[in-house]
Length: 228
Image (cartoon, helix red, strand yellow):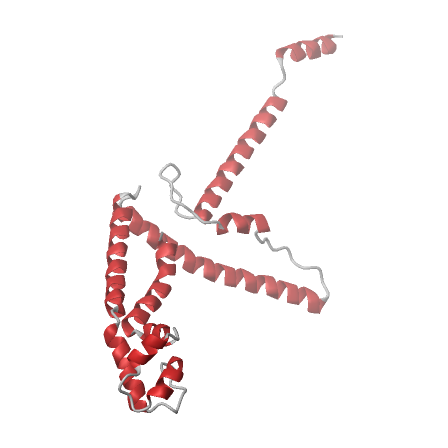
């Protein structure tokens, strides 16, 4: 939801400014090329014929055959007849009310409390700052290793770098879950890796224990062989 509201800010602001200014309405009306409208807009002008012929150029101000006074009068008349400024203010009010309602609904329907949300945002900011510094530091180490190996013509020193799958896992979009309290995809990845390593260690320990413990039947066979 935050991404959507952020993405809608720029186009909504542009539309609101265009409605408040009213220039797009002037371009629309002067470009219709309707004889009745042209006669209405250019009535009582000193250069009525040129005004009607080059009406579509008046908003851009590229036609010098129409006096500046007539051009200004036509544009002022169009702006007075239009009500698009009201639409602009209505759009701004609608955006503000919609943003307020979305924020209130998101807070009420959120599965986490306000303090936890505040902690989550603080963690996300800290993680973002640290990952930038860590990636820059690791990239510098990798570049130094490669350049050192190239210029000295020696085998590269071992340096652990996350694989493509690891980068993909921590780069996916994360959605908070009350069941698994992870605060980012990186947090989830690290915790899952630790759980996987712990399970592997337990399985290895169990396999080793089973291999060292000799069943009673085999002990009996070994004792018989020793007696023989």
